[in-house]
Image 1 (tube, rainbow, N blue to C red):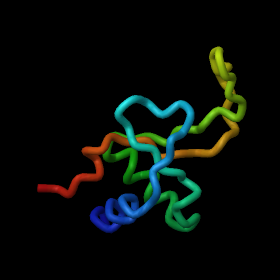
Image 2: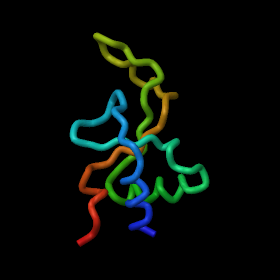
Image 3: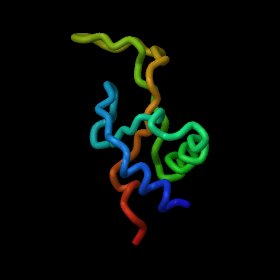
Image 4: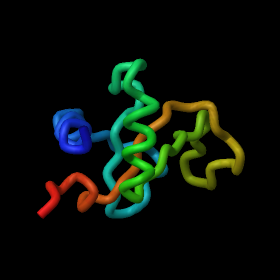
Length: 86
């Protein structure tokens, strides 16, 4: 199952979410079929990733307000998490 989830995530388009941490990959959580999200959520977290929420309000030329969730959710993980096990 682990390899199947990893391969599915590799087939999904990468996103350039607004607050993506440097060096991390972001994949829209909505791209995963709803019935599989709980399993993929657990896999991402078990492999050092997280589920991040893009701010609903993005301020250009300033700071994004804290606690401004409500936007799209993304899986955020290091590229190494998607490498096949050796």
